[in-house]
Amino acid sequence: MTNSINQTNLAKRWGISQRTLERWRSIGWGPKFHKMGGRVVYMMQDVEAYEDRTAMHSTSCPLSTVAGGES
Image 1 (cartoon, rainbow, N blue to C red):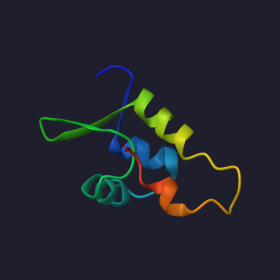
Image 2 (cartoon, rainbow, N blue to C red; image 1 turned 30 degrees about the horizontal axis):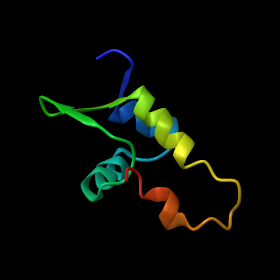
Image 3 (cartoon, rainbow, N blue to C red; image 1 turned 90 degrees about the vertical axis):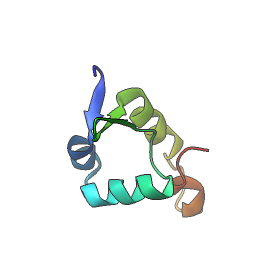
Image 4 (cartoon, rainbow, N blue to C red; image 1 turned 120 degrees about the vertical axis):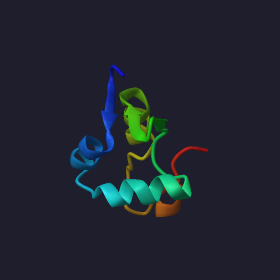
């Protein structure tokens, strides 16, 4: 898949564990993802859109509105 990123590289990009991404997928958080033959890939446009949606202007923004991911 062109213009995609795998779980390992996304975890490195965000400085989080792969397990965190796995947990997020199981509860419906984070960017959209695709499963292809047991492999999980994220389209860069979805990763960047998620990053844009979770950008904050203040520390007073409730975390629950940020981490929820896709609506």
